[in-house]
Length: 458
Image (tube, rainbow, N blue to C red; front, side, top):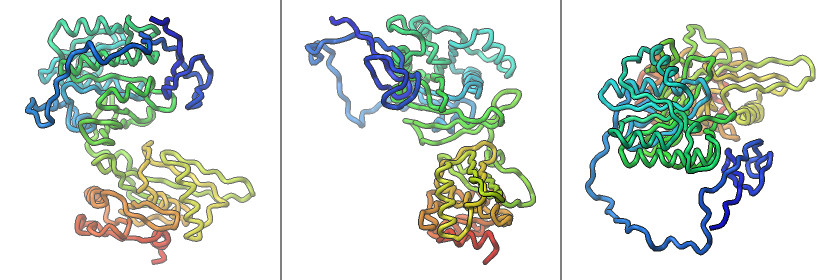
């Protein structure tokens, strides 16, 4: 057998190189090339077409046991999972340090354990005493959780196979695990991939719901090889600013439910609390309407969330280059929208600084936010508040047309439920009035119609 050759794998994109480089040649990331030695090198003559065990095929409609989801005791977590934990599923959860991943999983583990399900929590980053201290602070010290501090996958699997398979298994975190059959330090590409494979195989064979906590890179993506996200059934991202109290649990990939479902939590002294009505977190709650503020009914999965968008226009006296500052939205899309307002609506922003903020630290990616952002910009430019109790949604084209968006009726029903009485949106939303009789819907075909509405020309 040939001697294994050293190779270097990029932890950001998985690119393989024969020698170490400071910058990855494929994704251009710096200091991401890590040495990875293959466990086994086969020759070209190696043949896998014989000597194996025959695989039995089954028809697609073969009778089998129906998998029943297990509730975690946290309705927001169940919503993000698509209805609860599926036995035998593997879940990868990532998030910034200190965002609350361990707290959330400890609360879920305690709830499942108190409901009669066997729960195992294995920490590779903290000592058992530290986890007990957190549990005591959260009021969960009496939960019958099996707790251990270990990093060897061989020791963990040996222990698990000597006992009844747990219903819920937490590994915090996968980057601290190591296997003695793979060369390399914990956290390297080969170690993360190999350890995750062994733990996922155990979960599939024993019907155990497995949660792997993953570190994130500086840009917020889950660290480690990309293949790790393909191996698991569910990929979840725990988002939020530590300066704000809210946290959003977002499902990026889900083989058992809808993608982009979210669960909303608020960080409190006793841990993470569920937020039944997240719209209240992102609305200021003021009584008097202010210039430069517009409300947008965003849609996260199947849940509408009302977001406040704030704009500020500052006229410059000198010939300095005006700034464009954006928080919570795409800066490129703002530049496009400003160009449409200038070209199609005759408004001038070239001599003014533009500041745009999505309230509450929320991050918007929905193209339906175009109309709300435009309304906030026009309101700030004219120093005229938008009519009280109004929401805006719709995608704006380069021609200045307002294009229809998905689930308009759902957005309007949620707005009416929270007391909003006026809706601005695409004219093509035909059944909006019948869906929300308490809300006066005003369909617009062009962005210039919105400018007239905000400035009071009609």
